[in-house]
Image (cartoon, rainbow, N blue to C red; front, side, top):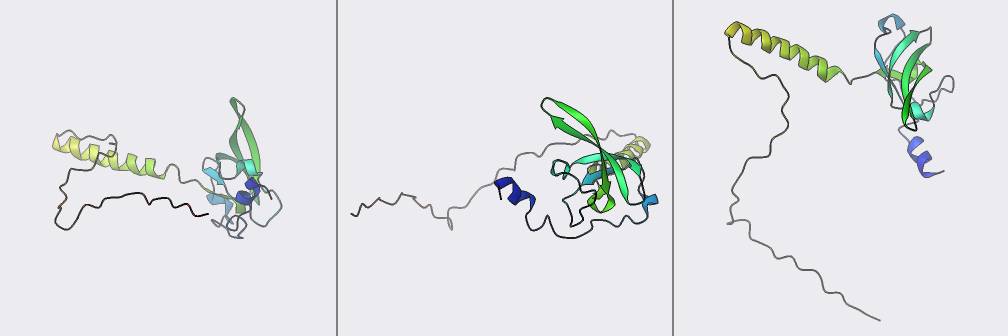
Length: 154
């Protein structure tokens, strides 16, 4: 096996499991995003390794499979590829969960601040540096680090 095959066929990738139960395909709307998963032990309609872990948009739903639009990078451009995947290889993407949660929280904060007549800052802030602190030298004795002398024995 080559170095790339060891990553592709590692133990967790070939475990036979289902991420979500999509037996009732009416629950899967066409506008939901789908994310291709590692292949299971089912050969039929298995996605190519290029599409593993990619996120796309479901455009077609059939009895046992879904059609997904995925953008594949080819040299300097992205090509829209339509891939038909079995539902065992697909799970709902969680990429928008944080965004949707933030929109709901911001709407509540905006409504509350409007009622109170105050201004609220809704933009995300980057993590600030840690605050300054003082370290006691009573229990932390400084230690001098010296390299070990090299011994040549022939």
